[in-house]
Image (cartoon, rainbow, N blue to C red):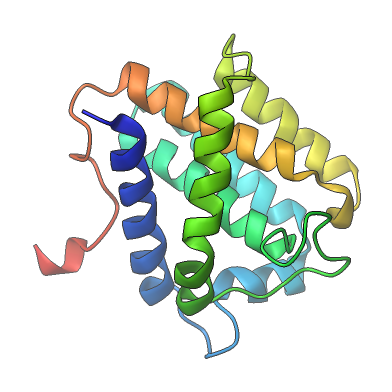
Length: 175
């Protein structure tokens, strides 16, 4: 089984459902509004909360949320527009996420194929990177760090989640 393809499909499901769940307008989602109103660090704190919760409960959905937020941050930084990203945060919608998800997937697949990440203590590494993000200007967050957190989340999911795709936080209203 190709676990990376499954993980990426689960992330796509996560952002499509999240876009419906947290819709705001045709130009931005609630994450964008909160980012504008409270600054970037509220988002890093939210993601760090999922790290702490995963440490206690080992729930698949927390890893999926961490990875999904890395895709959203990748878009907010503007790496879908150019290699350096944008000086200003970019608003996101399900339409934008869907349009650029293949580009993001290609970058992730290339990094995984090149295997240039140290997987030692992945949760602590993710937390340290999020902490670092909180200390620097948003437009200085490197693409490499966002994709590293995504891949570390994938690595933990692949190695530690026995029933993949069973603890999803998506489409619960239909069940």
